[in-house]
Length: 156
Image 1 (spheres, rainbow, N blue to C red):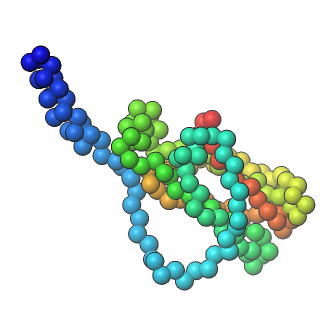
Image 2: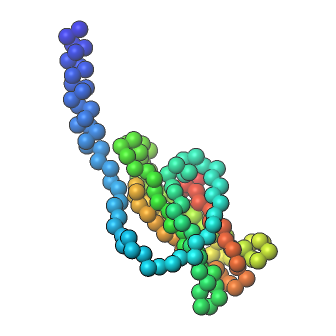
Image 3: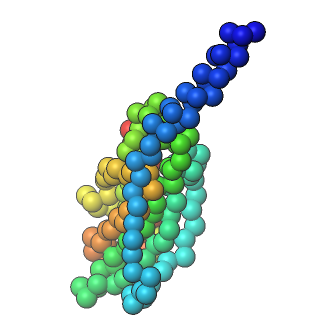
């Protein structure tokens, strides 16, 4: 009985020390809260078939603009939601910190048909926990009037 009490006391003392050693390596940000920009926001529909990616990545906004050349430019802002001790431990255990994803833009014409281009390839991106990232793409030609962004975990 005495031995059990000693083990429990040791565990009570050691667990907080181990948890304190699991410091989360996150990205902190500061920005101007008096925005003077007026982005042209895109209403979006997000379809996720990957439960892990859905919980780890949050799309904050999708903005677009037509450049003076007449080409459509799109910017997607998203944030890594992987913060906290449990996420950090899991990342250490699985070796996926920083979090790696792949993304690609597909361009569509005014009838919704895909415009095939050499630029429609998967690109790799790394995100630290809590990091906000923006990805941009410019339509390859003036026929492109809409887009679709695809994302997946790296290597899947």
